[in-house]
Length: 170
Image (spheres, rainbow, N blue to C red):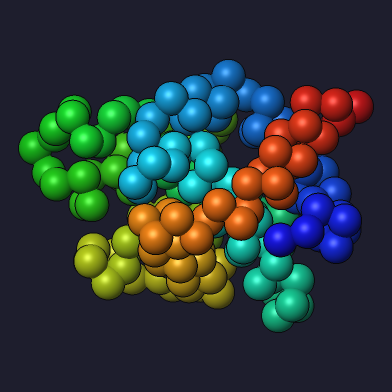
């Protein structure tokens, strides 16, 4: 992916998510290993960026709300490889993400709540009930696969540029 060619998407992404990207708890997601050798922050930005591109191409309404929920879909804030819970991580982390988001940022909209709770579908019972949830679910599967296969390395320059611009945003 070329930063120059993606400039319009990068600008829009940073405009809608800068406050989240600069939040210390969101930044702490860089400390949690996720898929293979990626971290939760990288994966979440990658997924949300993919969702943004799909929303624009499809002319989806509520793009900003969808992109912001996508960025926070894995806001569970624990090392899932080592920290275990009563439930398997697959089932536990969407609920933990919602709890963390609402404790830190305030209430989610019903759409955002469904997006996050259903993003592991069909592995979980919560079914996507809106376009944003289906887009997040699809993007998450694609990006997770690319993370494991090291294909997400193509996103590194865009990721670095997003973080650079977010830190400079007025």
